[in-house]
Length: 175
Image (cartoon, rainbow, N blue to C red; front, side, top):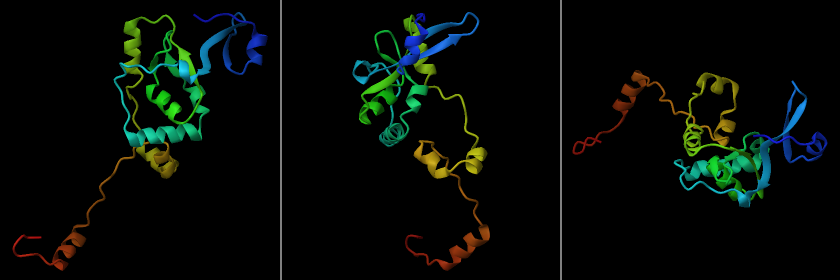
């Protein structure tokens, strides 16, 4: 549950985010806040992992654009154990950050925590490759960590036949 606080103190503290309930003009302390990276604990039961090349891209991404971490905080339980964002936490440590944005999932059951861990990592969406190819810079997409598909180019059969006739073939092995 969100706690009611004095709006003047909230507005003066840039490390506290707040939301306003316009119906009754109330302000609440949001559970998202900036904390020392040392108090956030990696989840030993995290079922996800990241390969070295992607991890390096994630670290590079965080170094280049750390502001995005405030908009997509690491989700933790009341004990500061990560429910969502284990790889981001590791990358933040590797990037040399001293503080990270967290969002506390307060009051969740163990079953809800387990469900969140899986659902947070399920990729439901698909890329629209036509839009990406025509509207975005391919090099930037790669730098940002998008795995672009490799398309086979159509083979010109006439050119393929011409290449076969130009090659010498070994009578013993066929190569």
